[in-house]
Structures are given as structure tokens and as C-alpha cells.
Image 1 (cartoon, rainbow, N blue to C red):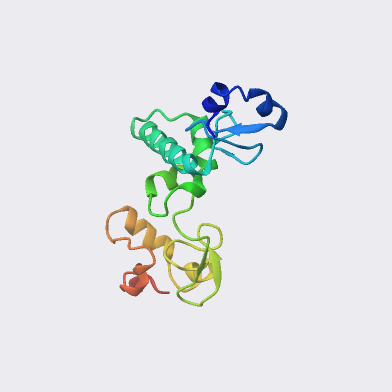
Image 2: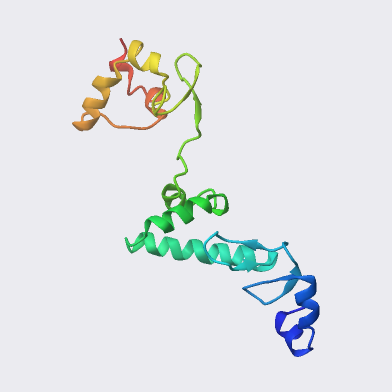
Length: 167
């Protein structure tokens, strides 16, 4: 039943005794504590039908703030809190939400050891050991910075781009 219907039918006393949630989107009432909030700042709560619509609307608003280059730190924090609702292929929002572009753990293309890119390995697909002992990655990165070689991520090795840097 909608909140307005409760008001019109004089059932407000019943509502205040039982306690209900009122959907900010459509006005529908549900048992207290069963609706979802988008963030911890507003007191807006939504029924299941309106929740997804409200999330998508908020994400599009935040996308507009990003494009207009006026997103605040608070809105970035909000976006980070909404990251599980961002579609998998939406690189723009995922990047701003702080979601890593690559999966955390990778397997070294040279030795098969598991590593985390940026911590104990690199984005070329090499663990720390192979990046320094098997290949001269420092020289490769310098040549890349000077425009002498291309970067193809983990395809760099399979395309043979790193072969001249093999030690």
C-alpha cells in the first residue's frame, strides 16, 4: 500500500505503531527495515523495484560530474561505495571507483609463478624475478618511453616484442 493511501484512509495510527519503511521512489510501504538505502548520507530508502533505478540514476549523475570535471571527493567516495553496482564493462566509472583494471593475481608468462601486478610483478605478465633476471625490463621501459617500442600488455611477450631484451 502507498503511503498516501494510508494517509487518505486514516491508517496513520496503525503505521506509527507497527513501523514501516516508505519508499522514496514510489511511496510504497513495507515492513520496517526491509528497504535499502543508496548511501549513508541521505535518509532515502527504496523498495526493490525502485532501488536499481535509483542506483543507475545516481551512477549517471556521477558520470556527468566526472565528464564535467567537477566531481567532489565525497562523490568519489560515494562512487567507491557503489562499485558493486557498476556494470563490468563500464571502464570509466570502474576506474574512478578505484577498481583495478586487471585481476589482482596473475601468472608469470615465463615461469608460471603467481604474482600481483604492481607489487611483485609487472603488467607485461612477468614476476619480479623474471622481469629482472630473464629480461632487461628497465631497458624496455626506457625504449618505450622514448617511442622505440610498442606496449601490448601481456601480449608483449607472445608478439616477440621483448625478445631483444632477453638476458
